[in-house]
Amino acid sequence: MNNKSMENINFCENINLSNYTTIKVGGCAEYFSKPINKNEFINLIKWSHLNNQECRVIGAGSNLLINNIFLRGLTICTKTMKSIKLDCNKGIVEAEAGVMLPTLSNILAKNGLKGGEWTVGIPGTVGGAICMNAGSENLSLAQNLLSVQVIDTKTLEIYEIQKKDIDFQYRFSPFQQNNLQIITAKLLFEPKGNIKQLLETTKRNLKKKTDSQPYDLPSFGSVFKNPTNNYAGKLIEELGLKGFKIGDAEISTLHGNFIVNNSSASSQDILELITVIQQKVLQKKGIFLQPEVRMIGFDYA
Image (cartoon, rainbow, N blue to C red; front, side, top):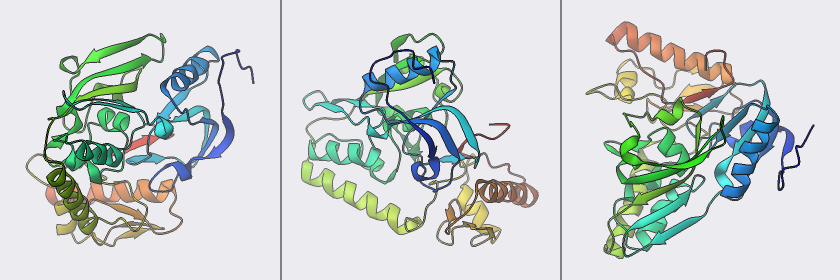
């Protein structure tokens, strides 16, 4: 492999990606790397561009279905990019793309910064959450966003984009379709909050999530976006689909909008189950459920 002499390029070859997704399913990455800071991340993007390698970026691997195939090119996992800087007086937080939301939530509470208590139950990274415009009920990280630093994978230009210039929609951001990869994000929270209260709220939010959602088995988190004025989980439950299985993939008996991996579900089992849910909800309810899950390595994805 021609390593066009970029410094600090470390990658492994032929890595099974099922260990890097929360549903524990995934194909094999030709090249794989976990940068520990933004400089390493930028170098990897540059390396893949200079060597004409396809490059895909994953975060915590929640909300992600990777096909059980050989994936050519470089897969970058940002989970080890954990740097976070706080300005507690102004409430400004600068986080690298790989900072986990539960970590962010706890750091905010401990420092008296208000507004991130809800993020504790979301098993994703800051970069992933901005890209997917992840949220809980009507809250999303986009509401706290000031700006993002990005790298254009085609031109290798690095620059900052202000929040007002990003067209966020429900569970959607332009980063799902453009050539930009998020490096860091600047967020704003309300300073000087009551630390004891914030810690209690955060703890309560986590308990509420773990009580109502299946955390004992591998899953994506929510599979489908909620349709307007409705809930995907409710529609699925009303059709009696909880517990329905294809192979080792099962619609959770605890929450209709969760698919769990009972032990050795394949990407095909899961994709078929997603399709069956869509067909049944469309037939019976006249509503087409849009997957929230990002798919990698499928013909149409």
